[in-house]
Image: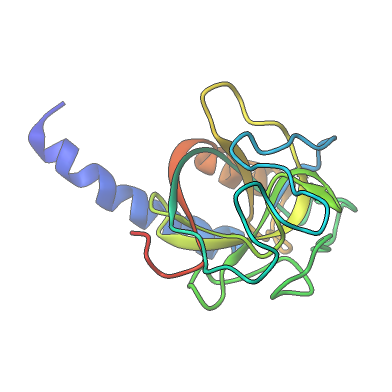
Length: 187
């Protein structure tokens, strides 16, 4: 691969994502079954503490670098189909967001309401799409081997066709880096 092509690939990915967001709507998901506990999160003890923690409010955790399986879900393949309903609203009553830290895009994670791999409200920064996302839904499938977790990002698609939203979802699908954080410290 020539040096020019290698230099242009990141810029082309950014432009492609901007075009897809414009064509597909704001960055949704295929609902999939049961809870898969997060492999790096210790279970809570009675009283709400984690091993090594205290019952009081603790400072936000440091950013965690992850290798995630990213997919997209849309108006057409949400549960129920033809809606933007989310199971665990935090910032949005319906799936949505622009991707800024203040208005992150809705993502679904493995598990189901009340037993999700990541707590509702957890934010991630996705450097490949240059967007922040927030956990507000469940039903994403278990991640494939080699991925730390699965994030299923809302892409909208209310005014699009199933074929168009599937094509948009396909462009997002793959292993990508992510940063889990409660602060704007990831880039």
